[in-house]
Amino acid sequence: MLNFSPAPNSEHLNAAVLAPSKTVNRDAQVSADSSFEDAVWRMHSMTHATSKHKYWDFRTVPGFPGGFSLSVAEYAFHRLYKPVATHDREGMWPTIHNELVCLRQFAHFCAEAGCENFGDVEPHIYDEFYSSLGLHETEAAKSADRKHKLITIVYRLWEYRSVITTPLESLPFNRPKDVFLGRRHNSSLENRTPAIPEPVYASLTSAALDYVLLYAKQILEAYKQLQEAWSEISSTTLSKGGKTKRLANFAAHALSQISCPWRKTSWCSQDDLYQELSQLRSACMIVIVAFSGIRTSELLAIEAGCCVSDTLPNGQVRYYINTILRKHRGLVGSKDTWIVIEEVVKAIEILEFLTVEIRQASASRMLFLSTGTNASFTVTGVVGPASRVSVSGTLLWRLNVFLRVANEILDRPPIPQWISADGVLADWRLNLMQFRRTLARHIARQPFGIIAGMRQYKHVETTCFEGYAGSDPDWNKLLEEEKVLASIDLLGELSMDMAAGVVSGKRGMELKKAFESEFQGRAEDFPASQIAKWLANQEKQLFVGKFNFCFFNDEKALCTKDAARKDVPIVNACDPTHCSNSCVTKKHAPLWEAQMQQATQLMGHPRSTELQKIALKGQIFELQSVLSSL
Image (tube, rainbow, N blue to C red):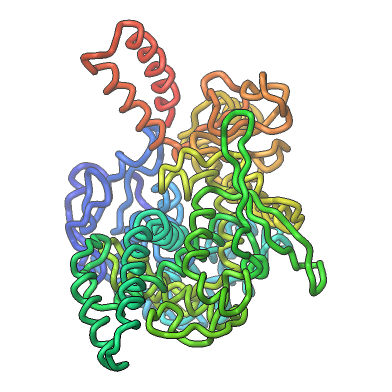
């Protein structure tokens, strides 16, 4: 096998630059010490002091300054800062470094086969590369895990082809990855409904929530003005055309006087308002399905007056919606109740207002009705009887129109596009089932993250999320599946952090010491795959918090000491410096750093008392002890 040089000396660092890229600016920063064009990326600021991944030399990849070397650099940059592959996210540098090692091996093989860049790779080369793994005379056969890793990274390079100057031209091995490698890691748990990628989901739900909480008041007030104006105009003796013209003139003047700062342009006509009303209706639907966990059939069964509330002994208000559970309940279904957050109730109240006329005309209490026309909000029309909307038609159409129109008219960063399975950058194709899967995924992987983190909704309590389950066993099963899948992924992340030496917290340090004791060596000297297998055999349930991972052991838990329930931890209420269950990794560092910054600022505030400063000093000491190992 080829030998690659270790960390370069200072003269070696500045010897050359990469060729110009079509997808990345030459001076784009990749770290505090390096820009994209540098032949050697110096990544000290993104690694631990003892890490082996402080540098990457692109001259060890064939074709420098272009060819394979440039493509690998483009891949690394986008993996770090602009992930594009379906369901991907920004990666940590130690992870990217390991992927570059795989790509370098693949690039050398392709170069030895006569290729000048990845665009020259023909289908037979993929098969020859796979056959070659572990067959070199000087090395032992590679493990199944190592082969799986190498092939997975080749497929990921294919997924990133839209941002690479000379990408792979053909699908690796002429088969999808799951077909070629076979399904791994509890394939029975996989669900065919894709989760909405986090950047798309966060931006989409943020826009929908803003419609419900911020824009709705002005939109509905403008709509009332239009309705009142038509009530007066329609009673005059003007001709039908005269009445329509007068309403248009009124609308043009009245709407121009209403501030709508969320738009790129002001309202100019009643058609602009009708478009906003349609967007508001779709936003309400998105808020309901995104933050309630109900199925499509239960969404369509929601009726006016379905919301109720109850005040708990601690003063907290809990909100419920009553609907009909139809799955496994026959044609009639059975009544069911879901605990929801206040924003869902607000969305339902808006729908109740928007559907008054259509419900009256149809003698129905249902909120999701359709006349089969686009005239739902036209104040001059006569609303006729309606029927329940078609899921495959009306609702799906409304969802995807909302995304497209939001990007056209809203003065805010656009809802991002995503790379399709065919490698095409386009709007994510939404359907209602995706929201249920996505909500379960976010609850399992980052509690409160998509709501509390994005919107700072501090009033969203654990009880709300527990309440999503209601009496629906399928929701519990879905959430448990996501928790298992999340544990697999998070153990992989934790193993990478242990291999890089960036773990903290009492349990984190105990895990590191236990591994090193069992394997008689530093964790940093072992591959992450071996650490991941060892972690998986620890037989401790993993809970995910914003500030740490919890390998829960009820006998050692501090958070449950005075709690009613002793069988689960109180996530995000952990003391990692004292609790033996807590493990903090690089993933959690930004929140700890933010706490440190805030405490330091308060220490220097002129109005801080001596007692407050003493308490803050203790807090800063504990924060420093956590951060010192990250």
